[in-house]
Image 1: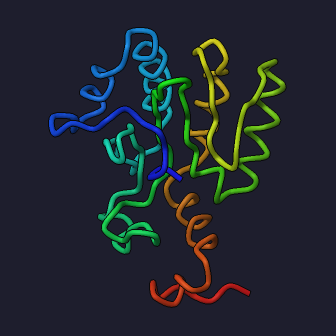
Image 2: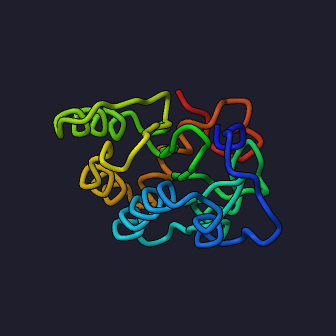
Length: 171
């Protein structure tokens, strides 16, 4: 989960993605910066960039999803995140965790681009930016408008949390 990542320590001044990047060593700053540019160039309208849990985040703001994230309603619904960890860098794609079709496309297109995919449930780990097919990441991000992502997210919310959120019971 995003909250449990081994990340760069947060400081009070780290409130923007640029502040986060400024804390990274030059090699990770360049790699995470390049991946950030790819995400921003392809991010559909409605998502917001921010900093949370010591990483750069992309999320659905409370203005579009007032109930927030089911695990912590005070937080916006996570979509993706970037982290420059001590031994590796990570692209956290909560969007593929809740959308199996998106995950299938990511795995297929990443490997078809000739890159090795080091991925857990939704966390893609890499050591250098050359390991990341930026066009694949950009296409994935662009293919997930907020309304589609929220439908997938809402359907993935556990039954115990669904009733608290006033969502229809899944069948």
